[in-house]
Image (cartoon, rainbow, N blue to C red; front, side):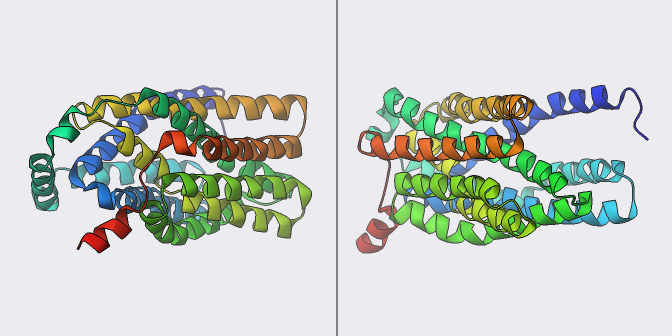
Length: 314
């Protein structure tokens, strides 16, 4: 049974986890941006985002199995063990040698123009606003899915399995998403991601049944899967060759702002209105983000057709 300290302990744990998670994400993004050529950046960042989705697939499944046989604390213990195992992998030289060598080759091949290119802060701000809306959707999705499941009378295990279904859809869609980022361009993929993602949130209150809930989660997952790695890809595109890690830490403020503000706005809407209103508001936020990106696409001038040009030149 929960004690009187349970809530305080949970809040402190979340606060301690957040900076570690942000630092880990920034480090991964910076390393991949340095190691992968621009023509393959969309696919590489999508694969990086796909690793998180693979975890989102396996994690809820393991959580559901643990909750079926053990108390809730077993899920947190499982998370600690997997984090420790991941840390051990970072110190195995055989897993990192080829990656480090490729990074050095890419650094040596940089042109003088790349080394002296300046940051387009106007484009960073415009793209950052769109990414903030995407972050609101991503942080709001698990909250609203869980609340919708509870509203429909689902058990913890059933909700966890529904999250797992969504993660599986995202994992499948990330492969075409990576291809589209390099061939069609970053802006069209971001627009499609936001529109489809938002449609899932708008669908849920319009179809307030178990079947509607399942369909809405699948639609959300299709949109989010197509946009796997889009935040990291655009950040790498806009980053300078010199001081990239420092720039990416600034770029992360946009997504972190959405991740911070999203739950506050959703909580406020739930307090003064209802779950359907919160769902609708998040969906409309996605539509607004898509319209914003479409209106500023020419100004952003994000890379497109990289994969096609690479094949043609080859």
